[in-house]
View (tube, rainbow, N blue to C red):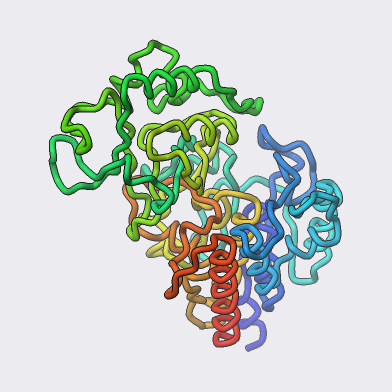
Length: 439
């Protein structure tokens, strides 16, 4: 009987990045015997240089520490769920003002040592090239090896993207509707878009700022030429003064209600979520530096004081069309205990990836114990991210933690920081209650 129970309490985790390590840690600490597969050091992705687990490829910052921020709220939720990432970050932190930053080598070494020394975790250093049938968390990251990416693609159909080309996202209540207006082109359908109209002078000012703005450097493993089908707006603009006015800024089919005439150019914004709290700037995928995006896109009439919940990005990123594939527990729909975690699910950022790994690990452990998956409320940041990756969305793109994906408060608080503090505290309290209730 004990042997059968032990056999039933085994699981595999593929990938020893942040998400994979968190998934293995969560499983092992719940009595599950874990085999963790990692292809390093025998095979390295183009972005990785260090042999240790949980390698931080780009920045060494885990973003803001203050709980009244999206990043700080997420980190506090991770601590509540027993995060290995947060434990290691606390032990290897370096001075970074209001952010949590780490010595990346010490951070990786500590997590590697913790994983390798856990009595319930066995590390196997080899590349996985077969799609698992059950009891697995797949956490192979945004640079999943080509052989395994092909296996996922072939198994799941055309539901895997290889490049993240996303436009900026702003909060609805930060758009100046005294300048913008709701409409669809030629009044077809409902008034589904917010339109920001330009005069000729406004357009010329914006255009000159756009073509002279500073772009972000590409990593050596990235090649912007792959984006011909979804070209960065600044690259298109450099093809001629009217290139974007005949492209993503075309004014045809629109009438500015303030003037009664068609604007010289127009930028459209489309709902990013069902609640209508977030809007993305249509056709504005970009490789501009984040500060430049705020400056240049702030010249769009109506977006002068826009609050950016996500800046536009153009980079190499393997991710699933998760709303068609995953439920809110990060489990593959219709599968027998196959979970995904990390950036390939459509969460974006170090802590977001790690948090998804915690949730996937907890839920696989619960399934192995014959218990239902933990249902997290969308008022907590992890629950909101889980909702993002599992809710139908025709224009699905990866999303990091931000206050715009959380439901509003029942009471109005005008001061933004006080409002964020209250939203964060509500979510953290809800998470604590959910965890206590499910124990």
